[in-house]
Image: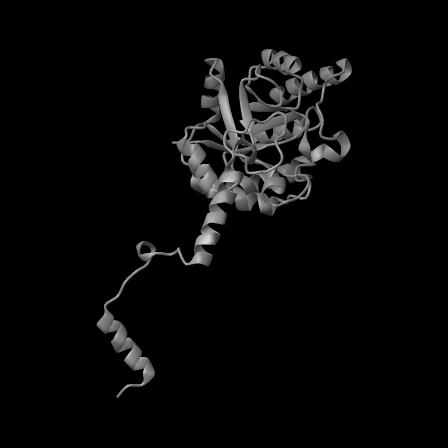
Length: 280
């Protein structure tokens, strides 16, 4: 059975920290699910780490659906949250149509929306219709062309806006709220004012949970690591070394060996060759 939003709330109520990671395909979902991660996010960050864009803005709903389906198939217990991509929830009607597709076609259990007071009415309408909603404030990647990729809420007025945004998203019925690139003291203050769990990314240890991008965690970049991320493995270097070894073995004739090959009866082979060669 999959974890529900009620169980996520219970984790917060018990004071248990909530880990969440992104997943973009069947294999990553399977690995994270078996590790016991309760929340998987199919983030539109796939636009950058999977599709090679410079931001999340070009990602389409159809592209999100493609990856959401794979993550749902690869997981059994985790609650799968799917991002609604750029400009797919500008009105209640559009948001309902977009959420309907990701819930029905992809099978995710919740959707994530970026924005505060401006999207609260849309979030509230989705919740009314039975769609679990996760909010996302602070640095919102879909607004990168307006905000820039920088910490949000350092000035008093900006911090106050984020607090009001957080309260509005909670009042709309969201079950959790991502705080991205928010000063740690502000994130702690927001967390203390909310009943629902906050999930931080670059927002300090005072949040109820944390989310990290799969490719950042495992060093699938060779030369880039965001300040808010921790590299737990350096897979890009290990994979590159392994591929070099494989390529060299192919060139040298060291791969494949008999262990990686199949055999057949010699007489049967000779019979087949005779048939092909036209023997009487």
